[in-house]
Image (cartoon, rainbow over all chains, first blue to last red):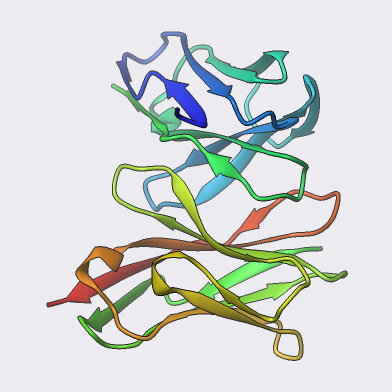
Length: 112
Length: 112
């Protein structure tokens, strides 16, 4: 059983399109995250939800909108995609804000 | 404020040689410290963590790290490198009730 699963694994799309990435965790964790990893492997936190409530909202363009329908799911919708959005997006979860993170396999987004 | 510095973005070692990856942190309270490994095209996987118990922490795949408060360091070591250790390694710090901060990563190359 995959603990943190993301879909799709790969996304290739044109500039200006809208896309979504879905994430589900079966670990019973209360906190979920979206991270962005750029081409230099740098990891940047984007959002964090605790029990469906947004608790971390870093400086991210408004084109990015997270949604957590329940504490096991966290989705990321991106409007009007730009070239600079190309990256690997990781979903993660933890028992608490400072606790060990469990990562998904990542979703590689390529914007052409 | 928390931060993590990983010295050396690229480290090369010969197979069988000692692996030493450096991590220094800053934290205003006793921190939690973590090392994660990322193999190509995969998500991050926890190697080991320090959460105020024993200062010498043993992890998976023969890795260990020592928490040194006086030096604000949490360096990762492995006595004998294997080819399969080639990967990206991330040090991270968190504080109770606060989010993770990741270092910029160290790419480990193992030379046969």
